[in-house]
Amino acid sequence: MVRRRIISDLMAQHTDKIADASIDLWEQMATQIILIVGEGGFNSLYARSLFLTRSTFPWLPNGSVPAQANQRFSELKISFEEQPPLQANKANSQLLITFTDILASLIGEHLTIRILRSAWGNDALDRFGKEFKNE
Image (tube, rainbow, N blue to C red; front, side, top):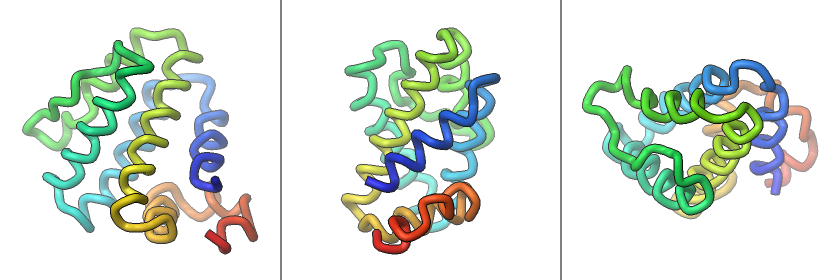
């Protein structure tokens, strides 16, 4: 699936400062999704994604989202900083895949990819060329 390869490719680009790079991706994506489903909708999707991903990475936060939007990913960042870079990278990849799987099941694959394009830029998605356009 193209979306999963996009996420894997983005995470493979970040071998240093995994926590910072991961949180940047989440903040960019959150901005776009909140425009569509609102903050409550985003928080629900995020909490569900954390819950599901914790079965593989139990050290992830429990899914409670701080009331202040600028602190939304603070626990996630701390969790990533406490892990070896490779483990944090794998966890973030799985968390992003889980989140976007849920989102795609609700709004469709095509719209989900369009949101990711808006969030992460055309460069991140254009390298998949024809495959992306056919999704």
